[in-house]
View 1 (cartoon, rainbow, N blue to C red):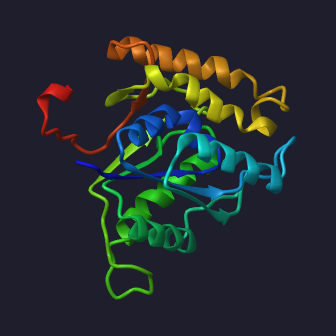
View 2 (tube, rainbow, N blue to C red):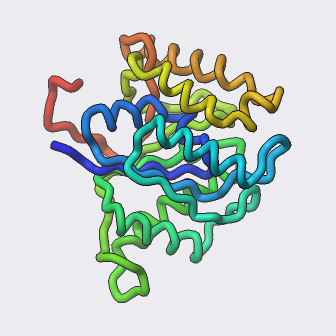
Length: 227
């Protein structure tokens, strides 16, 4: 059965880093995939608003997602408040995802933690009635967490997705963010970091490379063969 997936990212590039391979796999299987970036990610030392838009557009083309938008909330000072929750809730009501993906709730970057809080609240807000929001009320039945690169812990994982055949395309999408990971000498570490992390997750999952995910809620499957 084809499903609808929504990935919410604090900045352009975070979703590619954390779950780019899974996005590619979902599209390969014919699912609908939507992405919402909460901020532009700017200012950064080697980036600009124009550069980041072009980079995100190029990466989106590689991933092949159905639609990607930016909510233009304030980078660096992303805050969990009513306006942000409602703005995201409208997108949730529009896309009606079966599954939402958001950053892991513990992170060294305040924007990432704020993104998670906004997303969790917006998921609930999206089902409100008698409220001035576009589209019909909707509550996504599943919410899972992906891992960003600012982690300073060994994260708890619930399940893994085999991305062995998609790793090269994932790195191709990440490299679209030239201002962050090529022009910036401090950003080059991500390639080794991501390869090592995905290899480690792969070893745990019994494949070459995998992406890990976490769930606060019970995970259900109707197909035991997928386990």
